[in-house]
Length: 296
Image (cartoon, one colour):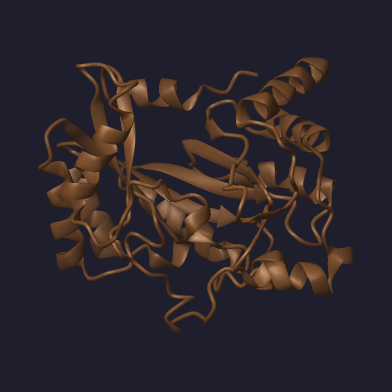
């Protein structure tokens, strides 16, 4: 596999050891507040991936310090940090509010850049212009929730936008010289393995710098958990082996310039309904590398 790792990608932009610190700044999403829909994405339970040190009741500065304390056992004295605005849609607010939050993060000691997770329909051109200007001083990386390149699937999971919106947003970000990360879920309802792999071709046509791949997970407290019970025939939950084979096939189709941040997701046991593999992400990554070698 020729794709660079995420650490290799970061080394092009930030020197020395780097650690991301997740932040919950209290944002919401347009398909939760009614602008695009209600109920949120059907698979989404934010508690499944938010670190324990994230707490929207604390200020950005306080969360950054808690994140530093959380990672203190493994970081080096010269480690620098990226403030990762992670929870919900982190460009979904007026520019003045965003500027205040982002610049508060950058004022913390040893914070040298921002990673901002958001939705394609929350990419405002004025905000992008501001981030492009900021990017001349510090590293700024936008992470876009693509989730699927198929409009029928996006509708099924209640995303509230189509793939054309995703394409437009990613191109607008890249045109301003900002790096782009994409997040894709494999194994969504009604999607066959062949359709999943074909999405690599569609992503190859976009100026994406980094990719996160996740397996579909059915989580408690989500709309999908109810849909899974009612329409189990639409769900083809994979074993760790079959998922690793699918990822290997996908990566063989992916253009080699895209850095890979993650192959697999891990959710708290008390929230996870299925699939329950009982494996650490590193084991799944080893399986992916095994199948990549076999394909070669």
